[in-house]
Image (cartoon, rainbow, N blue to C red):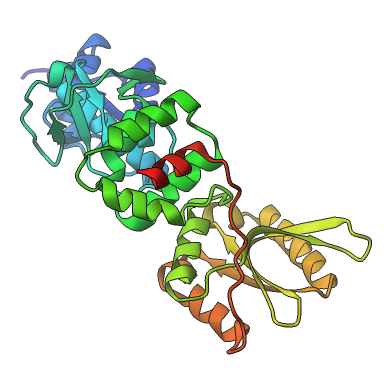
Length: 333
């Protein structure tokens, strides 16, 4: 009778490596840490690991990833599947660069060095792009201006606006990178609509959810008059700031607070928000509406705002700050 071979635990160094790669590891990385093909097969049979594509293993398949983590995982899936010559491109590269405003789900998307052909498999796209790469953390990706040019022309409107809001709000591009982005967009299929949608971009937006809410209101005919409205008390001291604001006919403000779920589920955050809303209402110069992500996605934010504004409201929008190099360049083309 053959003795049963017992396997030791997965090496901690391999699990630490996986943690930085969306819980994914390649077969080569496993072998380098002494995890043999037989051991990998055993882990997959037991359900401890899964194999999302040939040569790649998920070391934590039961974990439910947050959207940002899921997008980075998609990037790593493509990188590990195609090997060390692969670089993340398009929306996957944007996810690695930390850009917000992307769709919840992005397809794994890579390019091989020199624009070589590669065989797509298991939903992993291989683009024939020739572009330099940079290292973001430990991942290879095309530079941010290149990734933006690749993805903006393919993204839906709400994500184009939210991505540009985020990039401009956080000043992720310097002047040279901005010029490279504008040049890279020229002539691409879809660049005309990107220029058109850039008229809706506002760098004052502080989160993608605010960007989505603003677009919903614009489409419903109730565009906000201002963003990040500062509310002051009777002594002129700032007490709070509203995400979106409409000037009511009687001179007061209607403010919309857009609550991101990840932050506002925390008890401490809820207490902070209650104190903040009480300070707003105490000024007697504002009405406050609170909305969650679900209210933005189902359109109820615009319906509620419209019902409060009434028939006599007319938009009087405050223009966003001028002098933004990217927006001016897109408007000129």
